[in-house]
Amino acid sequence: MDNFTVGVVVFPGSNCDRDVSWALEGCLDIRTKYLWHESSDLSDVDAIVLPGGFSYGDYLRCGAIARFSPLINALDEFVKSGKRVLGICNGFQILTESGFLPGALVANKNLNFICDDVELDIVSSKGGWFNNVDEKQTIKLPIAHGEGRYHCDSDTLKKLVDNELIALRYKNNPNGSSFDIAGITNEKGNVLGLMPHPERACDKTIGGTDGLFTLKSLILK
Amino acid sequence: MDQFAVKVFVRLRPSVLDPAGEATKSASIKLGAEGIKSLRIGKMIEVKIEGNGENEVREKIDLLCDRLFANTVIEDYEYSLEKL
Image 1 (cartoon, rainbow over the protein chains, first blue to last red):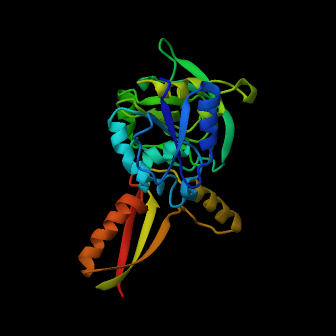
Image 2: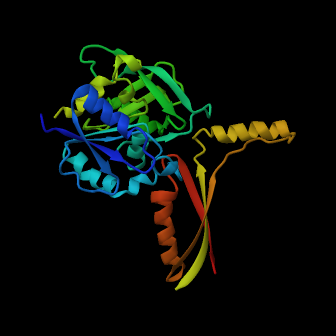
Image 3: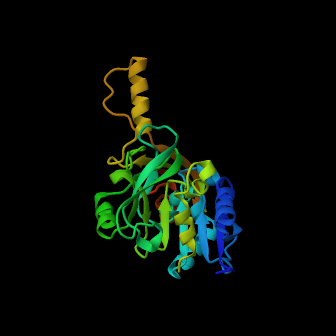
């Protein structure tokens, strides 16, 4: 595991790339490597994080332009090989725009940019991203988004529920998300997208450590 | 090659809540406008494009709308096309 390297993707407008790298390297001793969005060579990374921020200035729709970067084009094979991909906030938006995860993220119901700590129920630990082997657990993570309202049609929602793809639900829905959804996985479980920021909850001195488990699980096979 | 002016309209699907539209509706009422039953905000994209005839251009625009201009999970689109 010594050489395990997590690629942290940097788009123009990403602003949580360094936080993710700090959390992985400083708190978990996991090696990271920044991947510029124009790179399509993913051969020397073992997992990938799409960090939060405002890729391409959120032009057109959040994540809509990032979808066409060489790196996201190369991601398809990476995901099919079973390697793990974590999309946080803008990273989640990119994963839905590019079709790796179903649904879409739209403007918060109250139109506010919400910056707060939220309580989340771990609904499913598909893929091992959350530590709830035996019973439902609640964790607290920070959110910071203006367009984090998860939306999908009723057929998609049924599929998410039936296949246990809903990872996290807000205890007190802050943004109007369908079914209180805060994070989902793909069917295989190797792709997780979530609006809350686990990398901002990795040290007691900055408010909590509930994000550590999710980041640490990047190294799971 | 023919050149066309295309106007693409992208709208949130009726089933998707439009909070910006709701806020604008509320401001419209405060302005004194009466009788507004519904107000929803979309986007209009103007494209000048050339191609061999209308059918080829429509194919290109369909692709652009479906893959880039609109996210069909939440949005519908339509467009008008004028030969220049």
